[in-house]
Image (cartoon, rainbow, N blue to C red; front, side, top):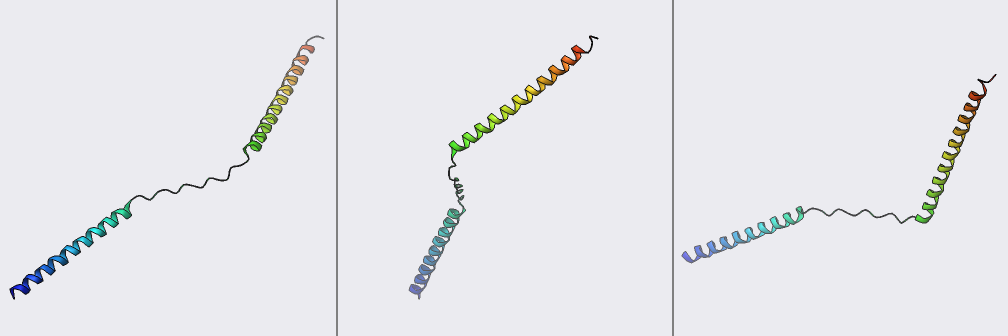
Length: 92
């Protein structure tokens, strides 16, 4: 009887140990799962034709500059005309 009791105790201990081991393994797995997920890198869009784009930008800038110059010239002409009329008027 005493032998049987010993064996049962041993079995119980072994079961306890195994259960503890399993629990530890589960905890470790959970910890591993909790690790931060890596952010996915966004896929870069296929590179555009930069040379063509640069040319377009340059053309647009040139057009804008030309428009500004034209506006400035028109303003200067208007100012000159106003000055002329002012100069011409006082002399009867």
